[in-house]
Figure 1 (cartoon, rainbow, N blue to C red):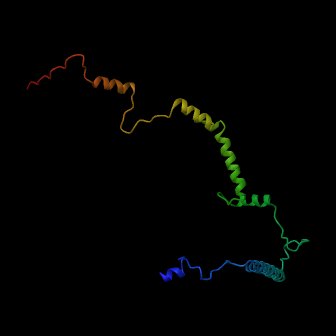
Figure 2: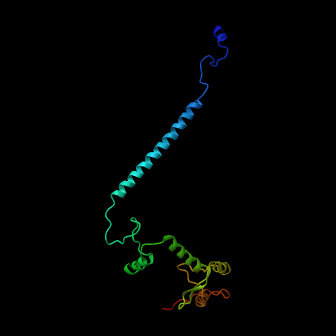
Figure 3: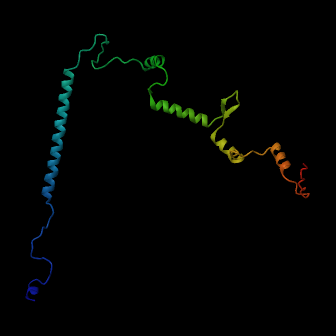
Length: 183
């Protein structure tokens, strides 16, 4: 009991504990050091790229005398795109590499949209036409989808109905008794 009187609270009150996690001075010192290091790295990278550019310019190969001289020594003669495209079309068969993917895809989609939303002939000689999607959906809703007979089932026709009627037994009269054959 005597021990209980010395330590009435079971918690550890006499042990020292930390009053702060980090001091504001340490946090600010770290942030300032981080900013200085970032600035130093940026300056070093800028200097490295500047040095590499200078090295690259000093070690450029001599330009061919066949290339026209321009006011800008870094400029190269560019052939007009239409001229190049025409030569490629003449020299290479289909399919070719795409020159302008987005433009060509846009043109394909516009053509598809135009075809899906307009009337026109698919094969005029055979009498096959295309109609807008909206109109086709209206027609399907009105008429329903075509029904195809299942495999092995004969579709009803006047000839087949007549055969069925002829082969069925007549139920209005009693069935005739089978006659025995005479030897």
